[in-house]
Image (cartoon, rainbow, N blue to C red):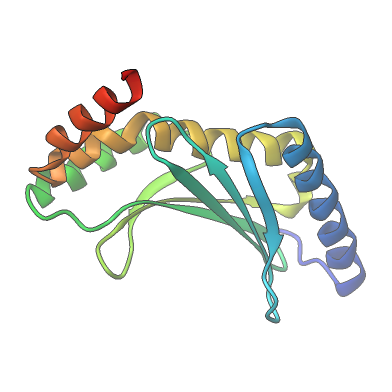
Amino acid sequence: MSELFDEPSLARIERQIDEWLGRARANHKNILAVDRSEDDEFRWYVRMSGEEKDFTTVWFTLGQRTLRYETYVMPAPEQNAELLYETVLRRNEKLVGAHFSIGLEDAIYLRGEIGLSVLNEAELDRIIGTLYSTVEQAFWPLLEIGYAKAAAMRTQRNSTRTA
């Protein structure tokens, strides 16, 4: 079992995450916002602009042993659900530190967690980059499987970008 962190240690990690995310925002032009929740949980979000998906927001939740992270990829499919779910399961094989999952509302998420004992600024940056790049690579191919209108939407989107 991983190490259980006490309150002073969690407070130190909380401050470090604030600092690390602040530096990430300053160093990456596509990070539009970094903020924290106002409730009892230690929770942050990082909102990024994308090229394939307009926005990707990564949520981080600090626990006593791990930092959990997730991002919403797409809504529940309207068609080809089995093929879509098979596709994301097969993509999981190539991912490191994250995995596709199905949310309660059958939407597709990308999730993971890291032990606090190995968390550092480089790992946090890697997590953000992994989730961002995975969403950017997978968004349209998955949308085209789950939605009949997606191919037409993509064509229209690409034509307005080049106009």
